[in-house]
Image 1 (cartoon, one colour):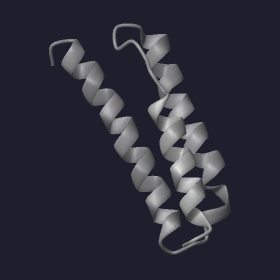
Image 2 (image 1 turned 135 degrees about the vertical axis):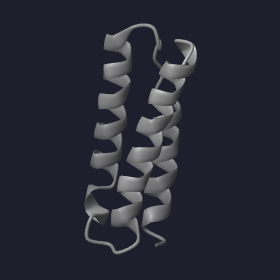
Image 3 (image 1 turned 30 degrees about the vertical axis):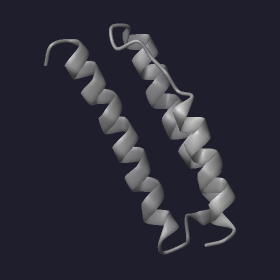
Length: 77
């Protein structure tokens, strides 16, 4: 777990820098792609870990859901 701590901190920093315009589909698509790439790249070494492997999928799902929620909220949904 200790070796994962700096990676998780870096992941947090990277994900916080992702921005998009919910009214521009290409911007949303780029943000979705960036979230996927960042999580997959930084957590690739932890896929076999019984705790961090599923955490990667959960984080990806949470961030992608948040993007979709922001898009829906911005478009009045």
